[in-house]
Each structure stands twice: as structure tokens, then as C-alpha cells.
Image (cartoon, rainbow, N blue to C red):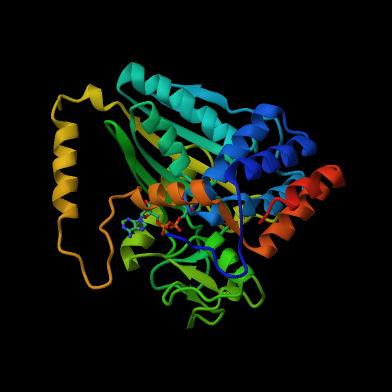
Length: 364
Ligand SMILES: NC(=O)c1ccc[n+]([C@@H]2O[C@H](COP(=O)([O-])OP(=O)(O)OC[C@H]3O[C@@H](n4cnc5c(N)ncnc54)[C@H](O)[C@@H]3O)[C@@H](O)[C@H]2O)c1
């Protein structure tokens, strides 16, 4: 799978990681924070989710400038009910506070067999699969319901204006000796960041994903980036719209955070996420054959005769595994607009021009 288009160039993942770390250390992050942010953003790019990769840096820099994103801030357990933890992210980097919230949840799930973690007031927690993978690495199953608090971008089924966020849902299942199954998607037909990537590249999006400001279907990503603004639609008609509503309520309300409505509309460049995660220890079930049963099912599912033009039937997470292998070997593709925006962010972070130049010239 080689996805480099004519205008895109590639950068080695470790160089990109060092650039991201340097930007955040220049902005004032402690080394561990800069490392967690770089781990997350570069892994999103490696996984093929450029919408949640290094292209987010300009938005984070704006949020920092607006006094919203709080550097060097850690997750705080505000209520400890044993197998239920309520955690306040205190507007800290999502890449830090979600990591810490999952570490607490993992420890409790190993102790009790299950732990529900409500994380509220986290600055953007990015690709949710990253948090499910953290749980899976510890051998645990997890489900995650997330809202994008106060930042409506998606119309409900039957509606024509923005009423809720792109509210992602994620579930993961660890496999013995293999990468976990990771189902991780925005409940909008496409993630907002994918409209940004398409807009920056000057290409259209698939039909059925967007409505213009008068509710007419369109494939032009500019309706999300230029006035008059249109809206994304939920995936899967009433089913996706319903899942998005429950992500809003489980993520935003149950965590003690907030949901999207007139009083909570976000007025700055911050993206605030709340997430309710349920983390389970599969060893706590009386299911010694669970791994074998899962593998038998996956083999059966993948043996379906393929439709015309379909090269493979994938289990959840396998497309990301394939992209990680390809991009790990050949580098991460970055379009020129995104690369320029990251350079401007590096300048705003206070990084020395000579150091910026060293990284900026690494794109080949
Ligand atoms: N933090 C936030 O506020 C926020 C908001 C929205 C989305 N997101 C993130 O954006 C990312 C992208 O979301 P998306 O909706 O664009 O994802 P997507 O549409 O690419 O779907 C990804 C999921 O579908 C699976 N998949 C993809 N192609 C497949 C195929 N051919 N066969 C089988 N399975 C397949 C993948 O393994 C993955 O689980 C996600 O990581 C999500 O967590 C975050």
C-alpha cells in the first residue's frame, strides 16, 4: 500500500517524533509530556489517521495561546469508588491525562475484574484507539464512549444543523500473540479532521457525509472550514445518530463532565473531550476457550467470498496494522499545507530557527 500522492512527501516516523517532542518542550512541556504527545500523534499518523496526527499541532498551539490547554497538568482522581473512578483532566493535554486515567483503570480492572473510568475536562484525547491499545497491551478488553463537549459538528438523524460532536466509540479485544482487535470510529460519517485533510489537499470527500448550510448534500469539505458553515452527518442513519447521542451522555454526563447544549457551546479553539471507559479483565470470566472461539470466528468471517474489487476482508484494527507496517518502513506522508502549519507552530512555540530548519528539511 503506497499512498504518497504527488504533492505529499514522506518523513521518517522517528524524525517526526523528535520534531513533535522539540515543539512541545519549546512551548514549556516537561520531557515526559512532550514524549507522550509525540507518541500519540505520530502513532495516529502511522496508523493512517492523519486527521488525529501531527496536523493537530496548530490547533493545540492556538488552544495554548487562548489559555485553554494547560501544560504539565495531571489527571486527578476526584472520586474513588473502587471499581468506578471519576477522573478530572483539568484541561491538561489529553495525551497525558487519558494515559494516566487508563493506567489507573488498568490497575483497578486487574484487581476487581472490571473498572469504569469517567474522565472529564480533558483537552483533546485524539485517536481513541490509542487508549484501547494501552488497555489491550495490559491484556484487558475495553469499551470507550467519548463526547466532544460543546463543539457540535454533526446533525442528528433527520436534522440539518450541528447538534453534537463527532463523538467517537471504540472497543478493543486483546489476542494472544497478535495485535488486538480495535474498532475505533467517529460516529460522524467521517471524522472532522478528515474534512481538514481533504480541504488542505484540495480534494472532495465521499458523497453522503456532508450537508451545506441549507441542508443540501455536498462533497465539498469547505462547508466545514469556510462560512456559511454546513454540517457533517452521522454514520448509519438513525443507528449512528443514536450511538452518538449515547456517547454524548455516557461520555459527557456520566463522567461528571458536560454535554453539548446552548449553555456549553465552546467559544475558543480548545477541543474538550469527556470519556467513559469500561475496562474488563477477560481472565475474570469463566471462559477458558474465549481466545480459541474468537480466533475460530475471525477465520470463519474472513473466509467469506470477496465482493468485486475487494482485496481483503479485515478484522477491526487490521487496516491500521497494515498502514503501520507500510508507513513504518516508508515514512509518514505529509501534505505541504500541514507541513507549513507545523513549522509556524514550531515558531510560535519559541523553537530556535536553526532547529526548525533542521527538522523542516528532513521531509523528502
Ligand atoms: N478525540 C476526538 O474528539 C475524536 C473525534 C472523532 C474521531 N476521533 C478519532 O478519529 C479517528 C478516525 O475515525 P474515523 O471515523 O475516520 O475512522 P474510520 O472510518 O477510518 O474507521 C476506522 C475503524 O474501522 C476499521 N476499518 C476501516 N476500514 C475497514 C475495512 N475495510 N474493513 C474492516 N474494518 C475497517 C478500522 O480498523 C477502525 O476500527 C479514530 O481514531 C477516532 O477515535 C477522535
